[in-house]
Length: 144
Image 1 (cartoon, rainbow, N blue to C red):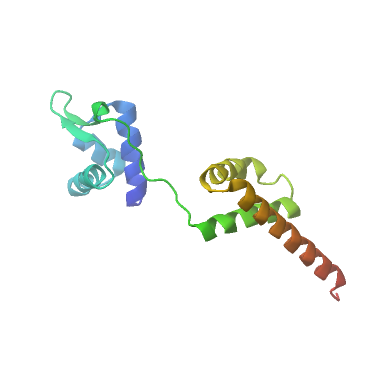
Image 2 (cartoon, rainbow, N blue to C red):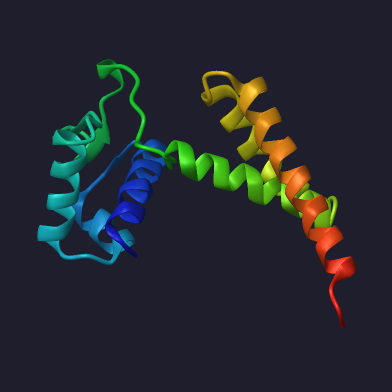
């Protein structure tokens, strides 16, 4: 398990169990004491997760009084978003419905994130449609 996976696991464990002793965290994560402490410190100092040690509960917990927080998600730059949308449109042309249920949430997230979603999504869709038609026409005329 890599470091990022451990961060998300720590977050889930502390939310689910309320408080956990360091030994229990170490066992769940399969890491040494030093690594567990490093992860907790990194999450607290760099990711702004309100992790606190609670003596009365005998473990680490997320301090709910500190307000809401969110671990960093998966981020794409503009060209990666365009590539993902192009891939999605091409898949729709080649095998309609194959990945639609799996990609629909991603498209929704992208639509809400992009500044002018209608313009960009339509542009990508139109570009992919033209490209797939050109590819189909070329393959029909190609010698076997």
